[in-house]
Length: 268
Ligand code: 2AM
Ligand code: CA
Ligand code: CA
Ligand code: CA
View 1 (cartoon, rainbow, N blue to C red):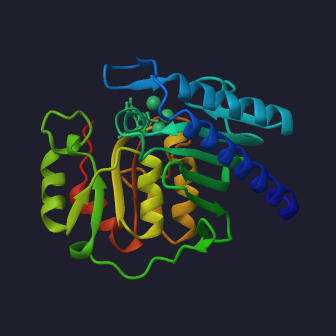
View 2 (cartoon, rainbow, N blue to C red):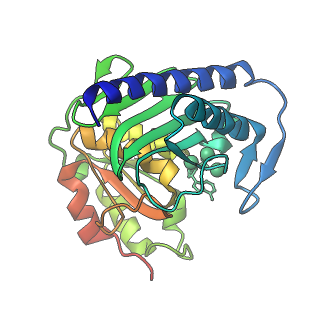
C-alpha cells in the first residue's frame, strides 16, 4: 500500500472510531436490552450491533472495495484475507460495558493481503486512543509509546484470567499456570482483550496470556504490540491465525519464550 493511501485510510479509520465512540458515550446511561450468545455470560447488546452496523455502512460508503470481518455479523463472509480487510470488534469487553459502563474498547485492525497495516484501540470512556501504523511506532493519543526495555520474569505483571487456574479448564494444564503465577510479580485481569493488548504495548503490563480469542479481539492489538517490540503468537509460539479462534501470548520479548517453554502446556 502506498504511504499516502495508508495515511488517508488511517485518518478515515480514526474518524470512524471517534464517531462510533461518541455514539456510545451519548447512550451510555440509556436502559439496554441484553441478550446472550454462546452461553449465559456471553453478552451482546443493541449497542454492539449498531456500532458494527455503523462501521459496515461507513466502510461501504468510503471504501466499497474493502471487506469487513466483524464480531456481530454485519460484515462480509470472510474466508481469507485477500485485499484489504477491516477486522473490527465494535465493543470489546461487553460485560464491562454492561456492568461497569467503562473498561471497554473499540478495536479496528486493517490488514492488506494478511499483513497488519493499521491498528486502533479506543478506550471510549477513558478517552485513550492507541494506534499504530506498520513500521511507524505506536502511539497513545499523540504520545509515542516507548520501545520495550529489559524485563525479567520476576518483575513481570501478566494479564491472565483466573479460568486458566481451574483444573477442569479445557485449554491449559493449570499446574503450569500456577507455577507461572508464583514466579512473576503479579497478575491482572481487565476483561477486554483489546485493552490488555494496549496495556502490554504501553508497558503497564508485561504480557497477556489467554486461550479463546477471535480475530477481532487481537487484530489491532497485535499490530500495536509489535510496533513497540513485543511478540504476539499463539500460546505455544506459533504464528497467529487471523481467521479462527486461537490461544494468544502477547508479551515483552525477554519473557516470551520462557513462558511458552516452561509454563504453557496446552491440552489436546
Ligand atoms: P467481547 O467482550 O467482545 O465478547 C473477556 O475476557 C474478553 O474475552 C473480551 O475481550 C471478550 O470480548 C473476549 N471473548 C471472546 N470470546 C468470548 C466469549 N465466548 N464470551 C465472552 N467473552 C469472550
Ligand atoms: Ca462478544
Ligand atoms: Ca472481543
Ligand atoms: Ca465484542
